Length: 507
Image (cartoon, rainbow, N blue to C red; front, side, top):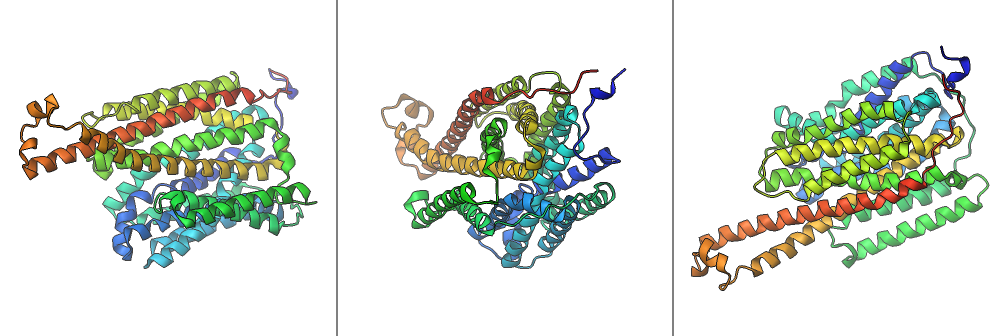
């Protein structure tokens, strides 16, 4: 029989933690889904709203930039107004903004409502993580993080599938309108089960927030606009870079010298937290890069319909769910660092399989690599979240969870920008190299494509199409190989994490 000292008490005791967790996860999944669910509906939106293809991308960019800027303020607004009030306002605002997006009649309206949606949604993820950490005792944090991680990681994976099905079956507007019943259920659960907490009168460091917002916003614009304007060949990108570096520099100096800064830099004295931020940056870089590459590969290169693309990608989420079930139980028994290394190994294996994709393959390599990668990422995210906050003082959790979400999102943006740029440039390079081999003295040209040298334009066009297809496939493979390198480079960081000391006696 367990002794009374066998279990520690949570920082915040609630009457129904299970129901509260369910409500929190509804809000989490709703917000995370919106990072990817709208992607497949963009062509339909462009046609309906009368926007050009280069303009409709602001539907995604506006949401990402607004969310990135608003995320760091979560800690302050939570202290100032209380968790329940902020949670209710965030869910309500996000749901109403989703309704507005669903009935928007012009691109300007859509961008405005997406900005509002991003601002309210930015609060949900770090606040959800902070509440889950506080309502669970230390020995159950691993299981709690498994539940939280399921929402964070499965949401982006099923987003394109759900978005494609809603767009094809109903209308692109239902990509946003689906948030209404989910938001109302989450709002009801928060009002019913999340108790009000004490308020903390904390001065708002407007100057510090402004500098951080400038730095993060300019960085996000670099990532979103870089490929379109040829990166540092454009004066626009240099201006953003100057603003971002200047903003970060002034922010750090200000927080170091101010009496009551926007973020207390002593939070980084916790080695696990500082190391965890570096690691979650790498996780964001690899996780969302793959999700950004697969839909165009499957649809544009392999010719899969939208629905089929979603179905083929769905097993990735199944792998993640399986790993969440296992790792939630294992993290209390096995060194979390060993679990992270196992997850990195599984993720690396999946990327190695993906680096061998070819245009003649069937669905089996796609599904198998997806399941393995989803399974591996679950073993990375949950132990990492547990270790990152294991040794951090509870009063830092509000700021810490917002920084954790911010760094993960920045990593995602950096990763997507890298793979997009590499893809565009390697397609051109590969095409030139492959075409250069189609010479008159090449034996395969004479035997396999005899009509090519005759000057027949139809045959030449077909061959050029095949060369372009192979060039694109090689470029995708190069990207997957690059992501494998990033994943392996993250492995040594694991050894900087400390295993927390358990003070509670065992039963």
